[in-house]
Length: 399
Image (cartoon, rainbow, N blue to C red; front, side, top):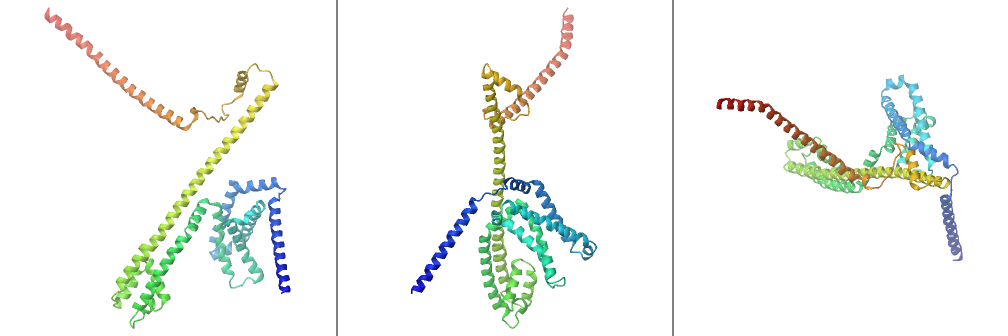
């Protein structure tokens, strides 16, 4: 009993020491401050720059193109040296990207799933070289490792926000899609057993399609996807099964028009939700960028105003208006100004522009009215000599 007590006490003490040590280590990591702050910030700016992203996307696309060309034996044989040199360049670029990201944030790097995907791609890159060194060039499964090199194109996912949005949508639909697939499996199980009993057990049954449960599942999958279902039904009709047509129609209605349509609908709904969230994030980022630029401008104006106030203290001005007048003379037309008055608000600008449009319309109508008045006066002036001549002829006739 005492021996058991001592063992238990020893375990408790060791576990407590381990917990204390791990907590102290985590606290020390949290309080640890790196001394290479400037270099780290520079590498982070390089990684986040558009030029770096363009270089990586171009590299991955070129690598995928060379992988496609490598499927042709003659092309690979003629350009063997080029392939070897390009492979070294691609591996060097991928490795440099990995080390740069790991250098910027060595802890949080492993918390991102897309970074883990990049690590998996780098590991896949090293598999063919390792197999050639360990097993030799004639290892039978070497072609499988070379075929896995097509996964390199997955590195494009981390540089495309649109693809990441679609992957997020697929991940959000995993539970719902899994439920739909379970229901579809239950439906196929019921119809597989029923089809085996109706069309596979009898003496003149269809042994190829309904002779066992595995074959029945595969046949039902073909019916669910409507792939050659008419040929399958024709085989059943040739053997004169009475319930074959009702069986096929009911299963196609349930499997294809209900469950598969439900599957597609769930994917579309979650994809639309993810796209809306993505657009909202883009609007928020644009708003934050505008606010940051506005804060920079306001800060610069505050610094300039503080410098002017300091200048006022150091120099003798008669009044504050004189100081403002001198400041106005130093302004340029390209200097940005952040104003919050009514004249710079967006609703006022919209109203002002609509007022200008109405003013243009009114002026256009007045011009048309002026042209009509001028035309009428011109016609009246043309008729005036004729009226005078007619009036004078009437007077002569009276005389």
